[in-house]
Length: 503
Image 1 (spheres, rainbow, N blue to C red):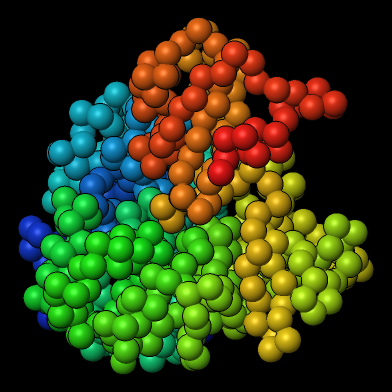
Image 2 (cartoon, helix red, strand yellow):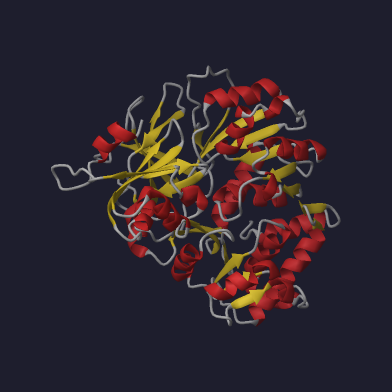
């Protein structure tokens, strides 16, 4: 039985030692080279005293080096936590306060920033680690003590109080998702994946693990091309990429800019998406240009290891029809519950709750928040059965397919990222002179709007936000009001503000 994601790496190393495993704009690594360099990093971390299940924060750009750091941390029995190199220092410090990492693993390009974020004794240079001789007996002893429920990685997501949450995902969760996806999509060593999502975002998980599980090649698309869909498609064509896991935002931009009509990417045979709603209009544009490809609509928050349900699109949809999010994945239980925690009937909207091996171990160093959403299944009160409350409203149609309806709280999906509007509000309240604020999201326009009352100017407040939250969380519009209206309960009247400004 597979009990560690390392089983994937070592199996592919044995089967395809000289095959290219990962390719970026600087070069490539074979499976033998990737595994050997990961063992060097793992040995270095273990010899430096990394305890089992200790956290290794990784501050490395989107390139091959990051994967060596991830796998190295796992070899040493640790948990890797990717960080966004472009995030404001203030937010990175908040994340590190939550993680309390044993080490901050970085490269020469980001070392100066790393030294500003952590004590010098915790900062480790990847280049130095790669010079260490791999101690296989040491690593084997570590791995023998590991179990499949040990954490593999932590993905940090937005938090409503302004403090990011660290989602802890086990080896078992990753393995079960990867096995299901690989079998459902018939992945093999012939697959050529093209990674688009950043590694600190859970949308990169299928790229990393489905490729290594199957001995496939993974291309890391250069970040500088993200604003140029034609460049990205030219890369796909040049390298004969045949499978992609992308967030809908990337597919939407490509469709809207008519890039598919400019570049022939008929090499693409499998197009999978997850992270936000995929508009049927843009899906139909992709289908028009790539009619022979297989399309899959995945659904799942970070707390359930990328995807809990999926729908292999098998029929024609008009532009005004919504794509279903399908049925539960293998070893996944899906519950749709009403406000009284009773199962909903066909066509009745309720909260989607998920149980099974893919559910996260909780939020790192945050037991209170963990208890709020990782809760006992109310339908099985006689034994422990933990489910995750997604906060998403869905319904089941007559065909047994699940359809997404919307959110029940202030959490949104924007550009593929799951964002707590409360975190943006908390950051805005840090602006000198801000008395009160409210954040809204226009799903149709895919735009974040911040309304505030105070003496600070809009541009100055925007600079405050840029220093505190990632670029994708900075509101597209900031409006200053004389007062923020309150409702009868003394709370911000979000309904009124939504009617006045959210359309």
